[in-house]
Amino acid sequence: MPERPPLLSLAGMILILFGAMALMNLVTTELAGQGTQTVVGEVKNPLTEALGRSQGYQWFQKVLLAPKFLIGVFGVLTGIGVVRGREFARKGALLWALAYLVLGFTETCANVSYTREAVAAITLPPTMQPAQVEAAKQGLINSSLIGAVFSLGFVLALAVALILVLTRRENVAFCRWTPAQLE
Image 1 (spheres, rainbow, N blue to C red):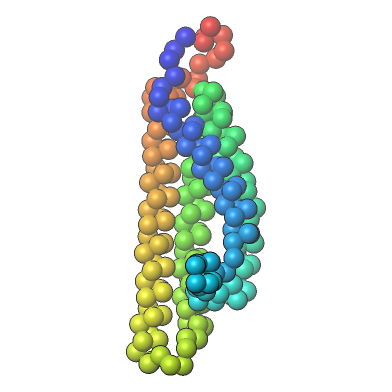
Image 2 (image 1 turned 90 degrees about the vertical axis):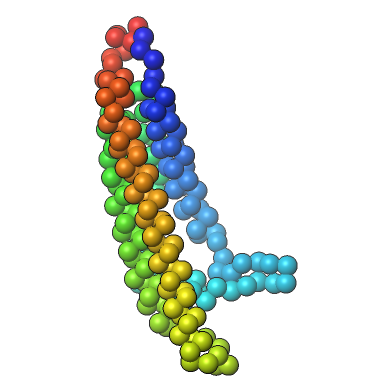
């Protein structure tokens, strides 16, 4: 019986982990509040509040619920199959990596676009000088762009790493063994 390649097991565990995290993210996103509770009280995030008022952003988030759920379930199922060395799961995991990449790119681009609109609509306290208001708005946009770059970089790195691992010769060969050949 051939020995399971360690990277194949790692890829399966990553798929299970990220599939489960996608499902948990759906739950926590729905339960999350608009502010952060601190010792001195709740601190409101003006960007989160502005995005909450954006009809387009709310619609976009609702549209993404189904793909996120499907990617989560598909990730867990293909991860289990990859750990068990199933060829159909290996091919499914390659599709999962591509879908994860497309969803990550779509969500990042939309978040940047809606953030720009939301920041333009934010009204800051009248006690702030016009230069301070512009600096605060530019800071919100910059922090959103930095987050988007890191998020997209992570999605790209994960998807490419999974594709490279799942297409390695020894992993493909292991997944193509039939039960009769394994005995």
